[in-house]
Length: 212
Image 1 (cartoon, helix red, strand yellow):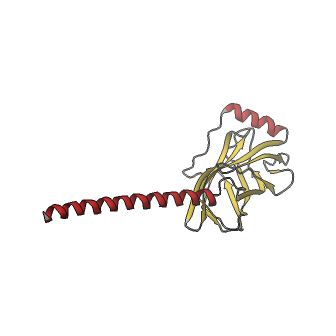
Image 2 (cartoon, one colour):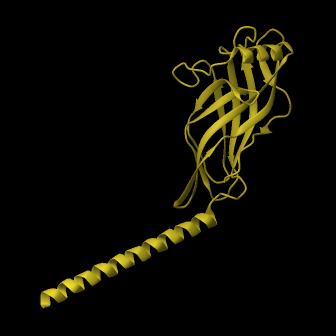
Image 3 (spheres, one colour):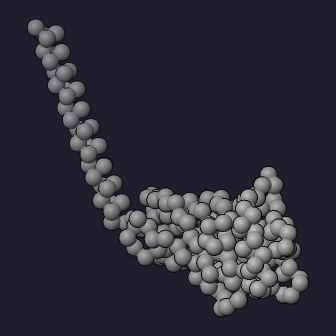
């Protein structure tokens, strides 16, 4: 009889522990969802700001190929939020023609931005910019278009960035994949020198997608 009571008591205790564990788990999940909804950067003004400070190209031979060109850009990364910390993993950046055809690429080291902080980053695009000596393949039709634009003295390009961004606030963090774009870059060439710089005002804002 005592053994039966002991078994019954043990079963009830196990059930109580299981119920308490389920309640605690539900409470933790609810708190997490509330905190995520309340403090998440989603739906707020984009904390990450990117501005293009300078952009130039050298050794560009539009009559032959653009693979030997050296592109240089200086970007300002800023965190305008007073609380969030922003971390960006190692990322790829592309010089693009017509917003879609990549001409050159570069790998950029990770960076961290504290609240209300900013950092200048210099990016060099060259024959080994993406590592392993590999650069984007450029179709013949694109090369012909580039040559036509180069003969007119101005090349229309843009910068595309592929970022994995972590926003951190205390013990909470949110990770997003973002593809900012610095578009409308008109590179004007010095006659016969293969050297060009962007025209217009500097610095200029880049488009950073809102967080969804």
